[in-house]
Each structure stands twice: as structure tokens, then as C-alpha cells.
Picture 1 (cartoon, rainbow, N blue to C red):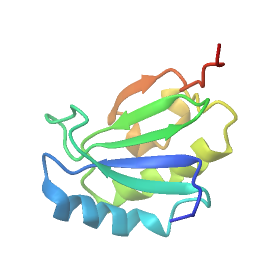
Picture 2: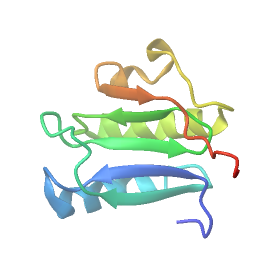
Picture 3: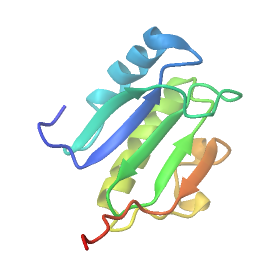
Length: 118
């Protein structure tokens, strides 16, 4: 993991446990672009569609994907990580994301913004 990542992949470890989260981390770590950090997190409320994985970066849309089960899903997440990293705003249409993620998108949230201090 980079010393100062500016993009993050979040892996839920609640529904399927820390062993499954570690397995996903191991499968994804070498496939992510430089600048990505991986964080195991507690529940992201995707419990009906585990395993859930999120993407975050400052000033970019945020994503949550669920039903991550296969090697094809892992490859699609890695492909999306590159797409997300190369985007100025993170916003993608469903049809522009890897096809394996089309039915696995649980949410897209507006960008995180730093508020100016008063």
C-alpha cells in the first residue's frame, strides 16, 4: 500500500468475515493503480449482497458494489479502479463501467469535498 494514498478501496469485513476481506485484499492489491490504499471496514450496509466493496477519493463520486464473489468480479473491480483513478471526477455511467459490475452497483454518491475554513 502506498505511503500517502489518495484513492481508497474499502472492503467490508462484517457479513463474510475478516478472512474473506483478507482474501479480496490479496486478490486486488497488486492489480490496483499506484495511489490506491485498501481499508477493511465494518458494515457498509450491503448485507443482503455481500461481499461489498467501495471506492472513495477526495473530490470524486463514491461507489459501493455488492455480490463480489468471483475472479471475474475481482478483475472488474481492478479495471474499475483504473478507470476511477484516471477520471477527474469519478463519475461514470453504468454502461461505461466493466460489464461484470453492471448489476452489482449498489450506490453512487456525490464527491467528498473539503469545506473551506471560516
